[in-house]
Image: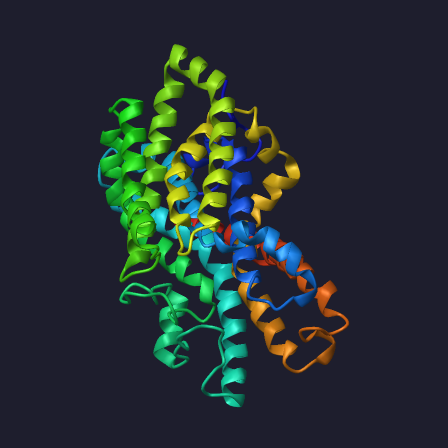
Amino acid sequence: MTAVTDTQPPADTTAARRLPEVRSITGLRIVAAVWVLLFHWKFTPLPDWERVRAFLVPVTDSGHLGVDLFYVISGFVITLTYVEKMGRRPDLRGWWRFWWARICRVWPAYAVVVVLFGIWLLWRRSIDPTFYAYQGVQPDLGPWSWIQQLLLVQLWHRPDFDGASFVGATWSVSAEMAAYVAFPVLALVLYRLKRLPWWVLVAGAVALMAPAALRSYQTGVIYWDYSWLERIFTCFGAGALVCLAVRKLQAGPRSGELAARWAPRVAWILVIECVLVVGWAAGRPYDRFAVVAVLFPLLVGALALTDAGPSAFLSRPAIVLGGRISYSVYLVHVPVYEIFWTFQKEVPQIAPGGPWTSFVVPNLPIVAIGLGWVLWRFVEEPARRRLRAVGRARR
């Protein structure tokens, strides 16, 4: 009847530990991560694989939307875990516990990657002061910038994310931290919105996603001033509303049974629609891919309502493990690519057309996934548990 299982409960609060995990949504995280990995991988020269790359164009060119999918998933999971705990009334202690839990989850692995890659950029700048990071705007490496990076606030005062972060892709982590800061107040609103009918909540989620999709469809433009702010709060909010809708459906015996029966078919339809829309957008002269993001909240909701259909695949142990390491994979993939691109200029064997290039380049995403697992296994998870224990001990 429901996709919720008790295999791996979230581990952020005492109340959260009693909540089960939606395994298919966890599995969906690695899909979003790989999508982003392929988006950045496309910038790697690979002459011998042009036919394969041409085949993958719809996936690689639309991969920036993996960030939007991450945000929708995040809004769903955070709301599922915390809205009952935090939404009844303002509670400053509860807010601090929530923020500490998020810091324990996000900061340790992020800090390790940012410090190591920041040192790499300092070395690169000593060689070439004009171009040391593969970004249109070179990031500032001064002391104040280091403080902003480590506090995860480097994006908050900027209209554009280019050059905001040492690790180019981590602008999205700074944006998500802004959503975490705002969530305690949002939870008070969400707790009261849960009284609305499920279809109103779903309509609200789609409505949040529609303006950016319409703008992209009309103009072909996907970035504008403070578009990052719009993306995080609309996608996060859409995921939150869909979470409320799913819980509303599951609360009624009849509605829950009907939802579980129809959810696998709806999920398949939405997966097919996503593929068709991405394929349609790939043939357009400008970027129209953002149109597909309107379907993300619906897809997340459908997957959460069933164990069958696409949820069955996403709930497999290997895919769920991929979802759990997806954050670390996301953190390391840009450093892996940038370091490789740098050595391509120095090592003839891996330069474009070199004897090793056609083997090494297709395996770069696999290297990133492997290093992501190492970061998750030896930094992200152990640090989260120890920091959480420190917080409990102080309380």
